[in-house]
Amino acid sequence: MGEGGLARAAGALRLGVIGALALLLAACAVVPQGRPGAGGAGPAPGAPAGPANALAAGIRPGPAFATLPVGAMDARAALSGFAESCPKLLARDDASGLTRAADWRRPCVAAASWSPDLANAFFAEFFETARVGDAAAFATGYYEPEIAGSPVHLPGYDVPIYGMPADLVRAREGDATPLAGGRMPLGRYDHDGVFVPYYDRGAIEDGALEGRAPVIAWAHDPVEVFFLQVQGSGMLRAPDGSVVRIGYAGQNGLPYTGIGKLMRERGLIGDGPGQYPGSMQGIMQYIRDNPEAGAALMRENRSFVFFRVLTGDGPLGALGVPVRGHASVAADPRFVPLGAPVWLAFADHPEANGLWVAQDTGGAIKGANRFDTFWGAGDRARLTAGGMSGHGEALVLLPKGTLARLAGER
Image: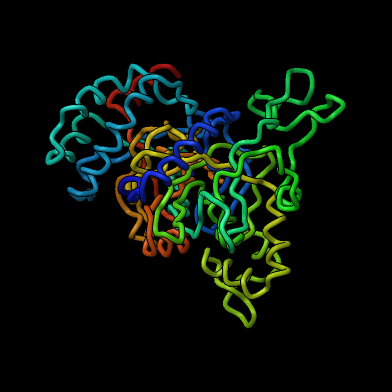
């Protein structure tokens, strides 16, 4: 689904507003986390009809960690992210089928007191690398946007940013067909008590949520809000300079559609006359150049994201810990244990080469070796994430002994 803490407060009044918003959101329904879309504007494939998890995809030993060109700063950031992820690693089931909670105990205990200056030695001591499937990786990028927004409704700030609606629920057993993973779908119960899909983006933009969901803030630009939803978190800067960080709280249960993919299919992306770059910046430019068609295009992504106010030092990923720029990556937990380090190498985007920690997920981040790299906040992060579309190789780092255990269990 940035670096630094929640930006400076702007007096007791603003703190009171944030506190009230936080209490309001705490009373709302909660849907499990996980960003609905891919970062940037890269391809947004649906869930592939492929192997069920990493074990089914096949796993092979990779090179020794010590042979990888990992810089000292890179290793330090990964060690910090891994240590922060350990409480979750030790408590959750691994959907990839690769590891058990006990496998992580030794590296997690060591990480708590390991010197950051010896981070490379830490990974060499406790980890082995593995290739999942053919190890051919594809990565997009995402970032934490900062947009014009206010916790109170001001002139020119007319785009509502919603918290979780009270009537967005999972169907009761027997009221709907379960999803592929066995969970019941999200939706709502109508006036007759019949479970139906929740309101889509178009209906919500037309006012369907009035009186049904709290408005946690008001934004200036609907296009920026759309891409804020794609990124899954961001910062709202009010006219007085105060900043509020918001993060993903849930989604309406409808499938995510990547509008970049739609534009590509319609011949709107390319190098020819009248075409636009396939980056996020190019897609935004098309929408601004063609307001009516652009608004209709955004509505084709029927998925809609709800937010909550955050008070930590960074946006939270699906693992429940803050994601860090050039250190955290989103992955499909069926193929990478969330919390595990990952080595990425791309000839076409060397800026993404290095060691990352899988701490987030995304609705379009599906399948083996599919990643979404997080770049933090600011203009540079926006530019990097928006143009990220890398092809290369991925290695998953597993606690030493994992591959031998898996081989013995076959």
